[in-house]
Length: 194
Image (cartoon, rainbow, N blue to C red; front, side, top):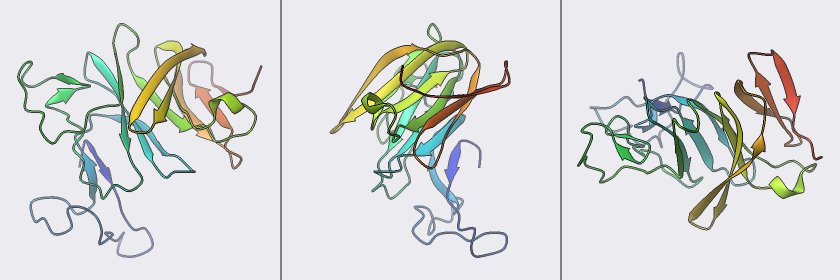
């Protein structure tokens, strides 16, 4: 089940149940738990607590890191492209790969800008009004903080400054305020307005 997002029912079955609305429930050639596939190494995914949309940070093989998006009304079954594609580029084969039916990333960056994407959250807190509704993420090897805004069907990503290097995860509290941790410093930080 590598490279896949799974959806299970922890309140039934032994050890778990399969939701009847999963996309591959009636496909004998697929695992029933699979919700989406074509991911290489999703390093943190999260749901927007207001819209229900899912954001996925997928670590690339050796050239590109990507951010994928799944709307709340998805019925599942998306193929995000790995290992045919890495980011928005052909991987196998290196040119002329078949891209029909593959969901393209909403943002990518190459290894000149980072090495391993760390997924975050859509900010829904109150202390930083300018970040409301924006997806926040970074890269483990760079201090760069990126913010993606969804405007209708379009996605706009911008560089919002620097954080400490080595961020391995984000978190949010009940109020929607964001936190991040660094493994090199062993520290927990909270996002605040200046």
